[in-house]
Image (cartoon, rainbow, N blue to C red; front, top):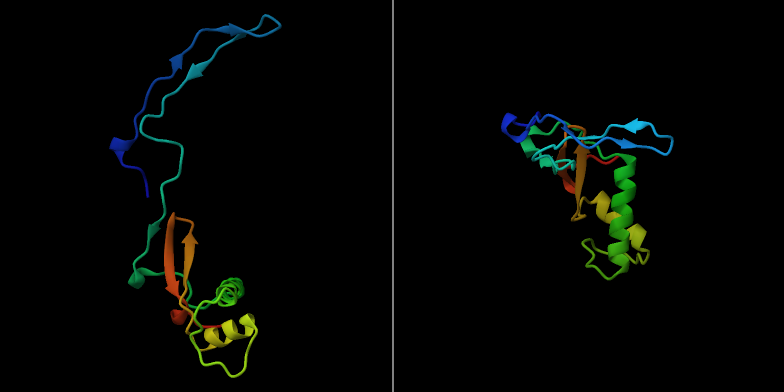
Length: 127
């Protein structure tokens, strides 16, 4: 993705007054205006569901983050989405929800081309 030609302005460097340092040497300074560019990266853009390129397999890092986030939600009295069989540990309940693909979270995968893909936990294949 290259910036459009109208967004980039080429400018000649603006020369500033010559200054001298403490040894009497002349220091030449110049300033270049960048125009509309701000120096900040553009916000990432979403990839359409049918155009995804990443694997449908959940990574062990995604699994750990999802289980941790959901266990924290459950410990803070979020509604549990599976039937409990005497479980009281929030991490065990989160694991049960993950195995039943009932976790209401979305995994956002950032890509190097400044785009991202959103995957629902129910769409991912568990490790």
